[in-house]
Amino acid sequence: MRLAPLFAGVFACVFAATASAHTPYLAPSTFAPRAGDTVALDAAFAETFFVPETVFDNSRFTVTGPDGKEAALDSVQLLKVRAVGEYTLPKGTTGTYRFSTGPRLGALFRTWELNGKQESSRDPAAKIPAGAKVLSNFQSLTLAETYVTVGEPGQAALQPRGKGIELVPSTHPNDLFVGESFEFTVQYDGKPLADQKVEITEAVWTSDRKPQVVTVLTDAQGKASFKLERAGTWLALTRHRTKAPAGAPVDEYSNSYTLTFRVLEQ
Image 1 (cartoon, rainbow, N blue to C red):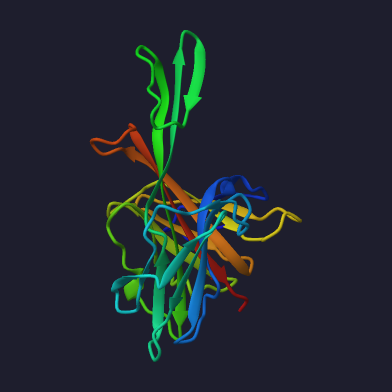
Image 2: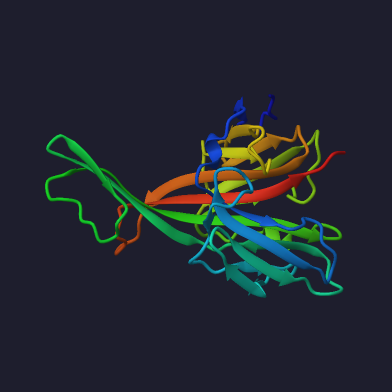
């Protein structure tokens, strides 16, 4: 698989689902609604996309409109294995909308070694014993997003927030076709992440076949390119460890971001 010289590119293309274990996603009922339509959204953690296993809860779902302004969804219901949101698009308004789960602090992961014995705990009340060698001490911080467009694609909803981990599209995510490339930048707190791994997984909605998984790396400017070789729905995942803020119950945050997008035939 070849890359444009500007971009670090695909360094692996394998047929495996390693990218998808316990991965958050936000999937819309349609990527191309009409003005006035109600868009439904599923949010969950899954191993196969988009087959929900664990509900995406404890967060504030939002929508950013074609004017760049952010608002809450009309409704969000938390079910056993997924959250379901709805938002009715304004009549007579065209352009692109960004839907977001908002950041969610999740499970704590602690592993330590004491007297030659390794132990782990996810209990927030558990204390690492004095004198133990800490092997890991972090908490997940997850965010899942997707875009839909009414009529012609717009740019206002694509603007970066400059906070946390983000995949910032250069190619519009609702204007992707086989034979072209999806170009984007990965950044954290507004700064590009060089040599950042992004795993892009085909959504198959079934265990009958394994999805295609492609891994790309960002260049020194945080930019990467994914060559669009197959139509369908895809999910891009990137993770980045950072020091946890003062007062957090862990040493680090494991930041993860996913973007659900669709590729069309020419």
